[in-house]
Image 1 (tube, rainbow, N blue to C red):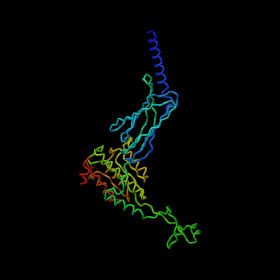
Image 2 (image 1 turned 90 degrees about the vertical axis):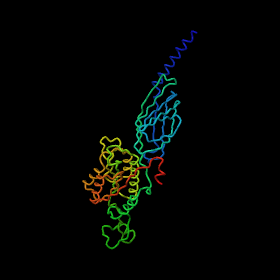
Image 3 (image 1 turned 60 degrees about the vertical axis):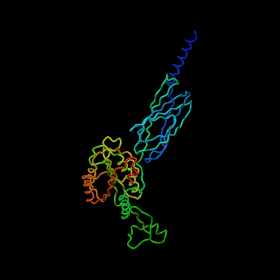
Length: 369
C-alpha cells in the first residue's frame, strides 16, 4: 500500500519530464518543404503537390499535425491522414504524420486545377507533442508556394464565327511588308535588286551573284479587349462570372493562335489584377509574349475598375491607328458601341465576340436541341 503513492509520484515526474522534453525539443531539427510538380498549368490540368518532412534527431514524434490554408479552386484527391475543410474562398488542410528518429517522409497529393487563378501558400503550421498531450510545441514555417493556373485553352475550331474566319484573315494580311532587318537566307540576284542586298560571301561560295532574302513582319497589332461587365448596368462585381470566365478562355485561345502565327498581341481589360491596391485596368500596351498574356489573365479579378467604353476612348485619344481590336463582351451598350465605332472611324479594325448566357446546369441538351 505504501508503494502506490511513490509510483504515482514517479509516474507524474516522468510524464512531466517527457512533456518538458517534447515541448522544448520536439520541433528542433524538423524540416518541411512543399512544392507542385508544375508551376504554370492550364485550367483543368492534373498535377501533384509533394510534401517532404524530416525528423533529423533521436527523439521520435508520435504525432505531428500539419495545417495550412489554400485558396479554393484546387481539388485534392482523397488520401489517408489528410483532412480538408473547403469553403467558397479558402480551404483548410490538416495532415497527420508519425516520424521515427532520423526519418524522412515524402507524400504526394493528386490535385485538379478546377479554376484559373494565382494560388499562393505563405506558411504551414506544425504542431506536435508527446503521446498523452502534456507537452505540446507549435512552429510556423514560411513556404512561399505559388501556382499559376491559366484559363482553359480551347481549340481553334471552338472559337465562334465570325471571329474564327476573321483571325484567319489577319494572319494572311500580316504577310505584306518585307522587313529589311530580318533575313531568311539567300537567293539569286534578280533585275532591280539594290546592290546593298548583295551577299558577297554567298556569291563567292556559289559563283553566282546572291542577295539576302528578306523575311516579312507584321504590319498591324491585335489588341484583345476583355470586358468584365456582364451588362451595361453593372457597377462593380460581375453577377454572371461564368460568362466572363468563358470570355477569358476565348481570349487565351485567340492569343495563343495569334502569337503562334506571328501576330503582335496586346491586352486591354477593365478588371484589376489580384492583389493590386490601385485597382487599375490591365493594359498590356506593348506586344506581350504569350506567357505574359496568360499570366495576366490568370491573375485577373472580376471586379470592374473602369467602364470598357472609357478604355476604348483612351485608346482613341492616344492616337490608335492601324490596329485590330477584338472586343470580347457580354453586352454592346450604347456607349461601348459608340467608342468601338470611333476606333473604326480612326482607321482601326474592330471585331466583336459576343458572350451569350450559358445554359442552366442540366439544360445543356435542351438548349442545344
